[in-house]
Image (cartoon, rainbow, N blue to C red; front, side):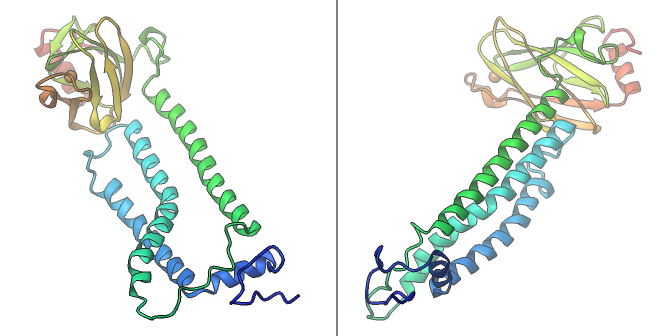
Length: 284
Ligand SMILES: [Cu+2]
């Protein structure tokens, strides 16, 4: 029996050629080569676009804490890993829409053999490649999760934090439709704007007076539910001076969209004078 499959005879278990030979023939087809070409071009295009959107345009305002830096890196890495899968799907779609449609001839459709859907080389290759990509994402995700949990001080109570002497506690209260902040160690001064010194761990005790809100400090990469009758904890260490956004991230009623305020990251001296102006004592 010849290894060549006759073109006018459908492939069957009795005339099926070698796996590698079928792969070779499959790759030699004109439409397969065109789809692979579109796939390569799309993959190359997606990478700079992802970089542009995530790191250059800084749609979320640009990171102001190590947590947000980690999150942006993770989004970028996940986009890179997903790019080939997205590109191959889009390449098949594009060729299906425009490639097949442009065939004007009266000829009958191309022969379907040699099929590769039952080809051991193709099936094992595809399964191994996607499993490796998925496994990489799981491992990366778990490592990042541990890192940002540590950077936001996890669920460890304020008093048991390793740097408990240096950190600043802030009690955060959400209510329809404002945020308010209380500094328990600075003579309980109150503010509707969050003011924090740079490079200092800030530890939040978050609660709500009415419905469920969500305390979201956008450029710090921190978001946690504010529940009535319970206290949730999170934190960050700001590494950039400036004014950043705080929003409510849980639909909480009519003015939910306007439930926002700012966090001002200042120097330690500016923070101390702000505390004095508010009637509190020095922190240092
Ligand atoms: Cu709210």
